Image (cartoon, rainbow over all chains, first blue to last red; front, side, top):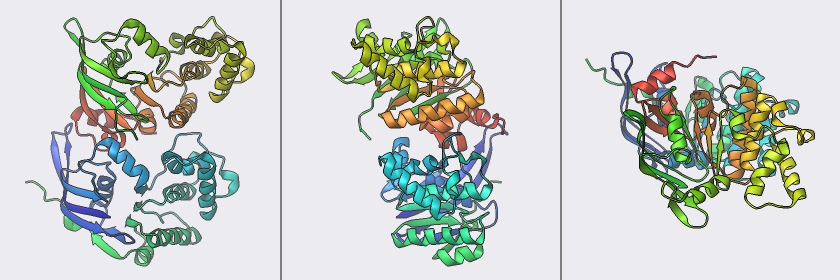
Length: 227
Length: 258
């Protein structure tokens, strides 16, 4: 489902003497349907960079990233928009929302974007929020004032509201208590069972051991620093 | 998503004497897409928007719009009455200053109704009903339908301008700094409103702004302009998170973090 071939990434800092920072060379990785692969490596090894390249946030210097049969490194913006809408979900560490929008609508939005009617989308969003123990009295409020853990659970509810065939998870269990952590791990196992291909970053080792089939140490793709 | 662009822009150039307004701008906009145009003051973004919307005649280039009746037509070479008709039906223009887009001496209901009458609506009850419905959609109390916009706050005037523009069900909306000069709380309300309307009506939009937070929330795609030229374009979050051009890097790194 996800296939990465000979992927390289560098950043050119035009305003700092055009310094070129080579952060990744020759990354190879593939993830089958129903499989969950963990990215590991020390902080700064390039885990998040790789995730962002897969999602199309970062521009690859060279190489390929196939999601299904689409090559993200060469796709047009509108194709990536469609890919994100239908195929590729991303649970980031931070919730970014339009202020004032009620939590239930934030969670329902991915379903509205693929054309589901507001009633169905809302119903499914409420189901997800309930599953993640967000108290019902908060559903009509904007999540901008919620606690860190609550925001993260809203983010997860949003990421799991549509059954994406491919999912990227950036620290989905960080800042969660034991009960909610368990629920999130169940959701991940559920997604695998229905055939989703998942790439995740988990600092929580027990969680990683439980849901991940393989680990890839990203530091072996570390860039060769130009002299 | 349709495979035919709604708007196809090729080589649009506008000079003011020796000075370049905008130079050789080309892009396609597809149905349902929101394109943001950012750049500092004087970068040519408003000149470009005015060329696209038919307010300024460019010196070169084509602006081809997929019309309902006759398919793709170059709006620059079409006759003035045809272009005006487009401006009343399929196109809408939201100005930064609501007073430029509203008739300040006419009631709120009249402002919305006027655009309906321009496309042939004649039944008073229908027009008033539709105006009231739109005031409600932009969260203006329908009790204010007979009040003049001069008695409204800045945020209300902006929402009224949006209602006046969208009442005829346009397919393409041009917006020039739609939240500029408003309080942040009022901005948030307008952003939320615009996002809902864009999605529910399947609108395409071109938004000119210098506010990167606004485009991050509203725009699917982004074009960055400097000295009249497009220096970078792409997916909004890609341009903001991994800018490739030196000017964009400077622009993104200059934003104050809150």
